[in-house]
Image (tube, rainbow, N blue to C red; front, side, top):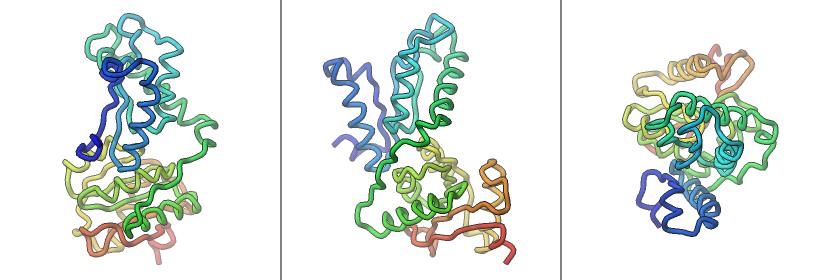
Length: 246
């Protein structure tokens, strides 16, 4: 499929509407998003999200619902085009889109929704990541940290949809720029080989605190990484303030 040979997919509904019947576009959007998630690739939903704000300072209610639907479908990102590039209200358009995203992701219906089952392909890296995700959810961890060289382990983590922030640590800025499109991923450029094990754990704890994810010493952070560095994730660790002081 197209997704197999792409690093990411944009669901441009305008282009889809030219090639397909308009009534087919909503279901194709869901199908494409599901396929991208199964492969751990970022998917962006775009085109006419806030079209009326090209000329008006406020959106229609249907446009707000369109953004919310893309979020519930599982999109990693939603994008404006003409609204911010050539519209009369570019700043207001971006602010409105952010408001809708924040409103949806802080609503009880979003928090209580049935989460998709983790996608595991039978390999040990996927099994390890599924285990780390389950552990993070069971502990109600405030952050899930993935240390990766290529970013592949981060892709595995985000397709599990753990429902908590994922701090992605890689030594390459170019890799992190790509990972920034993934849902709930916060990329950090850091070379883990320059730290001792305990030093890296302390650095991760400080990162989680600096983002505001950890606010109490009794909270936990789950780490998935590889030993030696450079292999697929094969090690899981729970980091707490107590373990750092041990």
